[in-house]
Length: 410
Image 1 (cartoon, rainbow, N blue to C red):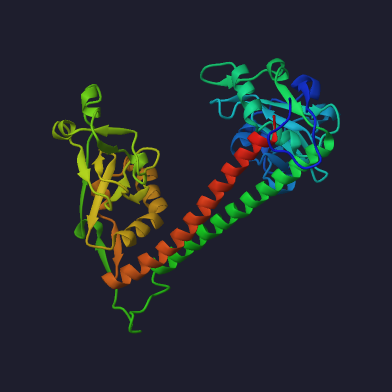
Image 2 (cartoon, one colour):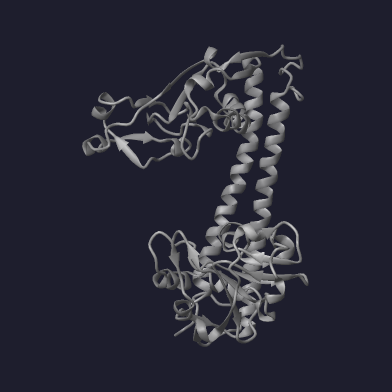
């Protein structure tokens, strides 16, 4: 039987089966590069890179920042059927990984704007009337995604041809059931969107409060209502002990057969690591042990400037700096988080290369008494807890949606 596990009341019977090429007609797109797009103009252009990184799966032109075709382009050559219509799928035909090959968005609102699709995209227009949003969700399902991955070709850059895309087998219900499914999943997406916005607002609130607290625009009082004393400015090197580690010889596989978590710069906030080393590796290298609760700073790598409190006992490599200070650890953590972009701009973009212990030890830290540090740290930690709760709610909602996509489709 061709029917989903989870179904709305009132619907039964098998779903129809069609090839993608039977359900959709392809229409031409342009091949203009990002360099030929502008911030203003008359005709908007969907670039495949924006499908991968920016646009929502249900594409509403009023909700997205869409670039325009440059005035250099002769737009008179654009055929009428190249302009997008509500219900069209715009599909990215190229990707660097299997996760996003054939990623699609469905146009749900054009707001009377002229929009075309550009480089490395296909326009797939439904042959017959479909519920708005249904095909967008259909393209997200495990069954469709797996077929596209198997039909993709290439090595460093993957591609999917119209011919191969046309071979994808689709299972489609009647229009009324499509409408029910799309409406329900749209409501789930709206909930995820609301939670995401709440997460962003809480993060912005925390950022604003950090700026006010560390600049002393806002001050806490002691428990007895009295004022705390004046703050001091101290260099990080004056109030802390710092050290970084090293990497055991990678060619000696036995070094990596131990139980000591080997913490790299991208893992400073995690409770697990990709690799573990043994005591001999520690003895024969510059790797250094750190404790749960130590402050870890990423000196270089993709996470350069990130700082976190270690969740585990382990060992660090040369790209991680351990900071043990006389300050409240969470107070110092939040100050360094606040100053992250300033530090990166000053020392990395300023031509200093990688960050180092010597650079960080020269940074001045505003230093109130320990009790005021604790009040500041506790206040910011309370906001962090709220942010984490919302982050968990977002993840739970996404997992719920993933399950729905598996059970509400065939």
